[in-house]
Length: 155
Image (cartoon, rainbow, N blue to C red; front, side):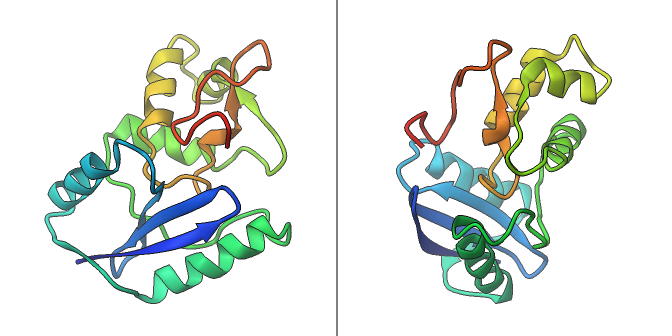
């Protein structure tokens, strides 16, 4: 079962979800795609979802607070990230972008040894269901500007 809870952050209210194995969701509460992400996770993990707590959600809350307080640079919580093998590789590589650093979509594609896969990398970034922890926000346009962020550019 996926347990979900609300978490207040400096960027706004987020919804977190976790199974007994790890965190599978961390998303901004105002995202229009959130209901679709719920349905996808229920289908992909072949389970149900309800509000509640578990050990991973408690650790996530603690680590997020430390992160936003500037005391944590890397998350150590277990993740459950169902997706295609390509998405898995992209999400894993996102976690290699150091705290305080950014990469362009082209640089991210090159890091994956797929320099022609810029759009596919951008799409995989966009369907990341574990915001902040899997730092898709660290990927920017080649010109150094923000080109889009599912959580909203204001964040």
